[in-house]
Length: 133
Image 1 (cartoon, one colour):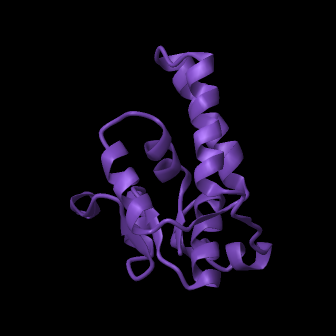
Image 2 (spheres, one colour):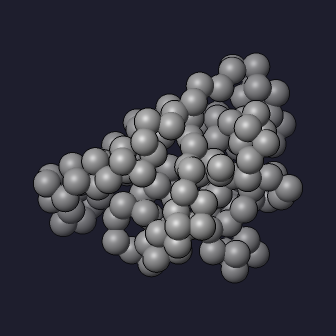
């Protein structure tokens, strides 16, 4: 079991430079977990791509359906106290929900967020290890 942030889910569902790595991660670690916030963040990723690229509605909708299948309703709530306790890291509350969940589950957090990778080196792992530098 691993925790993945929304960008990892998006890389899995949308073609791009990290898609192959995200698909391989799902083969290596099939049980993905995320705080329930991931759905809203994923919808925001899709809306942003629809506005800024030629991502069509049907493809965005399919990507969200693919994400839902990958996550298989594995959404978790994290306590406000656990998120607020991490405030000194300087990360956003959104990012800290993923960190708090990974801590609660004692599972690694996969992300490409450099700030999270720097703030939580024992917990956060890069999808592409060379991106950690």
